Amino acid sequence: MSYLVYYHYENLSLIESATALFKRLEIDAIYEDKFEYYGGKLGHLVNEKLFFIAQAYNIAKASSKNKDLLVLEEDAFNNLTFAKREIECNPSLFNLVQNELGKFKLKYSQDTKVIYLADLLSSDAMLEKIKQNQKADFNSFSISIFHSHYLKNNSIVKIYKELGLKIALEEYCEFYKNQSFNPNLTYKYSAKSFEKALDSGSDFILSLSSAIFDMFDKERKYLTKAANRDLGKMPIIFLPQLLLLSLGIKDENALNFRYHKFGFDFI
Image 1 (cartoon, rainbow, N blue to C red):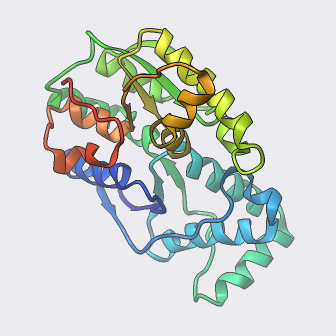
Image 2 (cartoon, rainbow, N blue to C red; image 1 turned 90 degrees about the horizontal axis):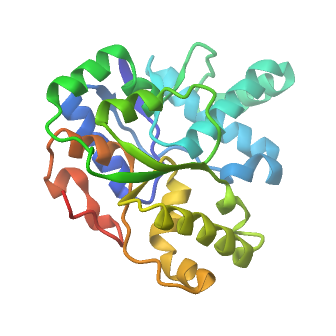
């Protein structure tokens, strides 16, 4: 199976570590120019038409290459799958996006799948490949895991078990979605979530959301102020980086921790 990778991330550590992981696991995934983006989690509330056209455009780009669309983290996956359901259940919306896509010589296809990276990696074949190539485990580490939305298919649990992860805290949070409207309240609740991870004794945080990563890594000084305590230097990492570490990869050109404010340097 071949995939077109959804790419609209400012943080290069996610896309570049994913690229290294695809190469290591022999996943046939290609990239193009950046995709369209509109409005994040609340985009459909700000301008419904532009939101659905943008997501339809992203799916149609994969359709044009006869590939499925592979998504690396939960924020984009949530937007794309939400849009896909709405477009395919609403004939008037379907016709609207199809007409708009014609301007770009693209066509929306319901056959194109939107696939979350964790679902791909948790297949029996892929887990077996990870197991065969695993060079390190995390039995001596405790981690906190943060989701940006509830996933019906909790397939990522299979990956946790395969890596021997000891999970001190697993939490769903959507604090970041209010940042544009009330930043002070956003930092307050973000700080409380970070404090839970810190007080759980976790060695690091696994973020399955680019927005949560940005909040915990890039905005740490604001969280520290909101919490009125030193939040330390706990690193935040993405799933591709975690898997690369489990495969014994320590090459910075693959891991790309240089893009993080708080590096991961104890393995």
